[in-house]
Length: 177
Image 1: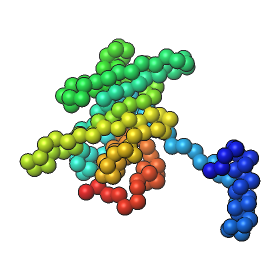
Image 2 (image 1 turned 60 degrees about the vertical axis):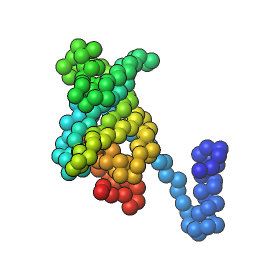
Image 3 (image 1 turned 120 degrees about the horizontal axis):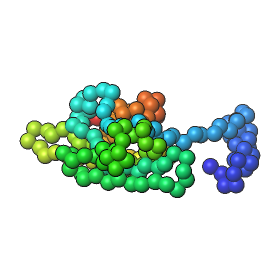
Image 4 (image 1 turned 90 degrees about the vertical axis):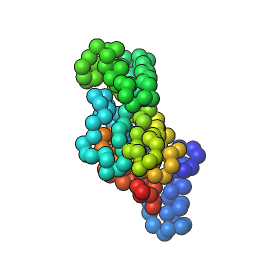
């Protein structure tokens, strides 16, 4: 990274290529990862069995919906953390009086996801949560290494991220214990 924008970045890259690696280097634009949060609009049913990862249930605690084509119109729905209660998407569908979110002209712009893990023998129920935005920003990096991997596996199972994106994001040496 070089201050001053693309022009200075290109000049610095040319100098680096010429003097350090002795070859011409061409700048490549790095596209930020985006989350396909609209995949969550009609529920959190996975396309694979979560029990292999030790996950009992996943639900949306909070959802921010933004109107399609109307700038500045959005609303946030917050649900109870109690897993027996409706999640934020179910509450939003009720408020919008639609059966499926694609019937309402709203995009899911941000969400708080709660992951409930399976109870170990004699243990107590454990859960963790993280925030994600369609723009690609998340709080996954603030989780423990094990929960980071688990969160990405959940997002992959829900088709919020692609398998290639997930593989690129998993920290080196990370594994689910």
